Length: 109
Image (cartoon, rainbow, N blue to C red):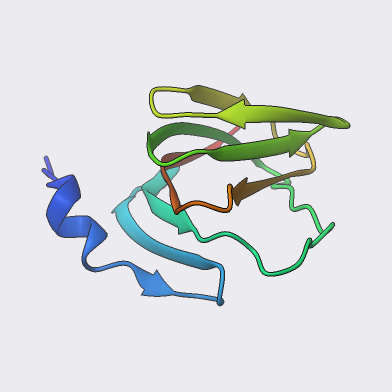
């Protein structure tokens, strides 16, 4: 068993780009989970990612933004849950007024 206090974990996020910070909180054979935060991008980045053998489950914890998936833009606000099937191109972005923070699970399927 592992307990993660979100407020403390948010202070330990690691920068992976000017826009994205994250922290892995759970790592098991069948899934990984953690926190990821997106700052508003200075310019649009049309690049989407996909996961070949993992579904994504995420919940918006703080801020607001959007999920671009299947040609749609879905508004994200705290409390929103998302399921993204494996091999589905997608990207997240924060709105201009603040950071978008998600709890995510990558589940091997």
